[in-house]
Length: 259
Image 1 (cartoon, one colour):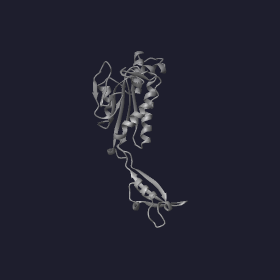
Image 2 (spheres, one colour):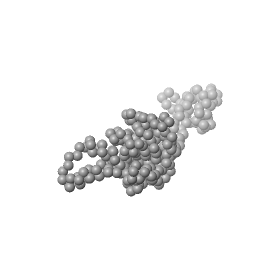
Image 3 (cartoon, one colour):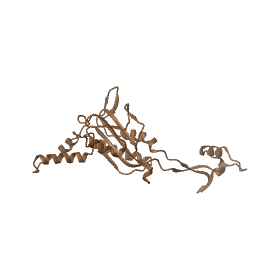
């Protein structure tokens, strides 16, 4: 796959504060669901990386193909004795099959199987563009999330785990035309609720993590955020020893965006 025929894809769902013990399962499922939908539609891609924080679930997919591969389609038609009469003229069955295939009868092929000869047509179904397919892929992936206690808000919006406040969906530099719960997708994310509540423009998906860190005061990578908390604990002990319960550390990691 040549890189000039691929683009990076970014999906971010911005929400109110998420239940800390559900964030890991939600973002993992979101990534797996997207991967499954892409495979189902024969859209090749590169590495998948997920991001999460108390107010966001995000997935970055590198090198997503710009379109499906063209698909060869083989259509079997009526048997020769049914397709043509005794004088060799096409019957209604042959005419109907040719119409179904969108070709003249003379353009149909004949093949043999164990039972004899039949009409046959081979064609190519052009692949659809990823940009055209992504709205359906995203919606299906979100619908399948394992939400334990879905809620509604506003004018009966939802159901979802928490109210959605913004949505980022980008394929390369283009915004995917998508709307979920009356929230339209854009290329604007938001930083920390207090340190940087303003919108942050994303020019291309691969900027996502660095933009949030450098401008938004958000460490979107769960492992990096957890390591920073661990380092702060050890520093507070003057680099002595500290008992760090892993369950509590995981909970705290999912409670803060900028430790």
